[in-house]
Image (cartoon, rainbow, N blue to C red):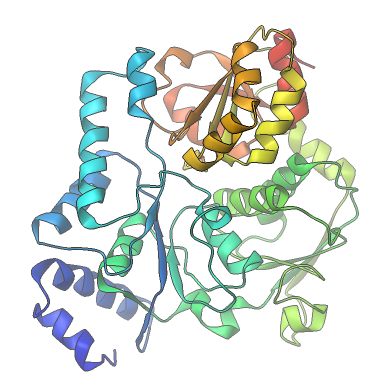
Length: 401
Ligand code: F3S
């Protein structure tokens, strides 16, 4: 790789052993992908997992004296005070969360603990070079904001934040951002949940290809776009999509495809979405709990849930995970109070894939997120899928229809 004199100094360790280690990893990564050079980044997001390997790596960088040149936002772990007072977390897991908190604080990260920073406090501009990990974040950053990021791991994103640069390959290059498959959506999209189903289905129809969706309304909102990207990337490692007439690199089909014919053209009907939903995860029936917020729910989603439960009492547990920013707004607007009165819980800083849900093991829940259902299988949680409204109604009655 062609490195600038500053990059060579970083690699020699002249700016510290931590920066040297980060740079060494980034150069190795760049060489593996045929990158010719590095580019400075102005933003990063680290999808920390709060698990052993993640913490080991963060502490290793820290012990070597690393400090982030570009302070990244970070993914959720779990809200220690809430789960401790609720008696839902073990002392070793609390200690691990505390160590994770301390390590990232010492590295200079922004302790945002949310998986939707691209809607909150880490919003890139068009064309900006960034390093984002987190499966819902990379597609949103690339596709909706038109900024550039590869599908980073939490480790490579952290190295980029420490070194302030990333190797130039993959989705940083114009040619790799072009659409490769056309997905003609003939289904009328009824709600944000339909976009989750579309995202889960598309990689099965056009594996490994960057999709260009046609037939979707230009009014498609942020929650639907978040769902689409999260499921594309979870089901098929697809970190970029285009929507004709909506996303910035797809003003015309020709521009989205770069003047090339699509490698594949597929269509998605209402029947396809219904079939997909029927075959995903658990069948309908009685449920014990509802889990929302994978990715973290927005204020509008919290408002929808609060209005549906207002003045009623839930028969099943309702958990809504969100960012601390959204929680603050929800409290100000009286939404938190409405949810609590119905016996629901709204919790900040927390991920579904954390060791705080042991009491739900072996029980059946409902969620609006295939990603949630998929990730938590290994923790013994079982889910039936439905829209936000269907799930709230299921929490009120104890049964998903
Ligand atoms: Fe967020 Fe965790 Fe889901 S990071 S997207 S709640 S798996």
